[in-house]
Image (tube, rainbow, N blue to C red; front, side):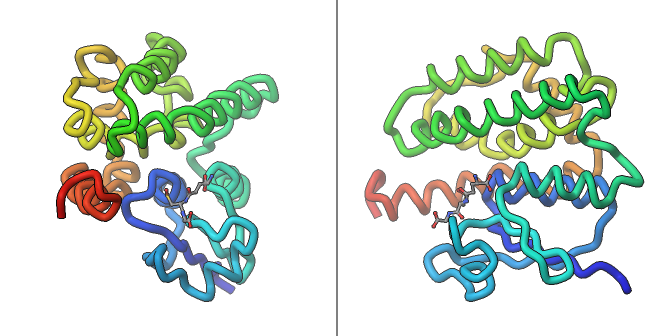
Length: 216
Ligand code: GS8
């Protein structure tokens, strides 16, 4: 029996995009379902009763929640190609450390910029830390795209929004990160899974009005 894979997602979610990128890298066919987070589907509420958040991957009727856990699940189930986590336990622990660092730091720092609650300083410090971790490597995973690359590349779709709302340039301060983004986008599985940054910016502008930051 063929696998039935459903992804409950929201187009602008950097978390959902991680699952999209991982599924595309592995060549897994799936049904994409866009959620309205103000009116969540019964399937979402039943599949992620604890957090009630997207993304949720439903594999043959069984839900998996939390984007980094979803990416690791995809890597383990479809292990025939494009391994994302290194086979060496120490290297694997390091990859998980950096993905966890991104999760703990970057979302809030980015959100503070586009919701005008903070400036870009904190965000850029985190990105510089990541840039030094990248070093001279092509990818965080080394020669090929790996777990940390998947965890971080989805944020690049929001870079334009952060820059517009915060009036600063990421490339000026982190040129190697921007070069890495371009390298990742040369991989079709990545570029076809990520939305147009202009659409993210339009989405953020709508939310800014909803939140009362900009006049409606
Ligand atoms: C975060 C998912 C999340 O924040 C992950 O999957 O990695 N740690 C989780 N999802 C948001 C949309 S993206 O900002 C969400 O579903 N929010 C709905 C809600 O809070 O009600």
